[in-house]
Length: 340
Image (tube, rainbow, N blue to C red; front, side):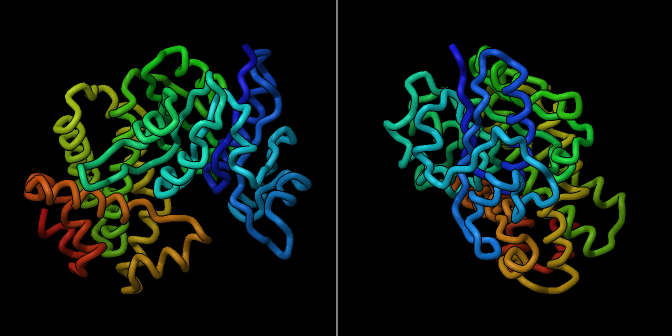
């Protein structure tokens, strides 16, 4: 069977992985060479972004300066992008997953499988769901997850890094590894979707803490403490709600490595630092600094707080609780070291 890959999303990270996937599918006989990429249509300098990508082979808005392979075809229609695909790569902000799945329900290939590159969790009245579970339940497909120490611009520039794919079905994990693995983007696959996914979501909260420490100029020792406490709380939460999460997963790229890189670079750290130095709100800074991208750390902190407060667990997760209160309740940033 020839597999056909479609990308759902075309932001900074989506465009970076499009470069990898576009090249990789041409190296194997069992992949169709064309890769459609769903692009939320918008005007850039008076032209449609899809037209620019398809003629200049560059996402000039979200990943300028990086050439995309010519077999990446930008498409503004979601259903048209995905209808004949057997492998769906989800790489959009987690807030959009529900509406995307509603549009695709009943309109995808019967042999389709998916992978989520999304970092976040879905909180609802009953508790919370993982993004892979949302995709599986909505579309009736198996879903893997990819997460790691992967700042998009560095991946696009082919600077060496690692990533982790979590799978439930090993054959799916190996198929997705083939389209992502390169000498500079090393993929390891593990049988732990939940662990990989929770690491990817929760580390963004800790990165807000790392940025607050930078803004307060508290130094490297303090940041190391925030990273350690953050990793401890990430593991504690994961094991509390999912008994099968593996300890080894926290030592993969999706765990400790992603936590370190996100606390050293990345948008959550940068905006949190600016919150301290400018006094502006996170919402305002998101609009000013992120060129239309979403700040995942604050929304995930809010999601986590909703889960923890409902279950009367805030006292067991002091770092995540304090970060939420700094983001949403005007708690002074210095409380990051006083209240934990």
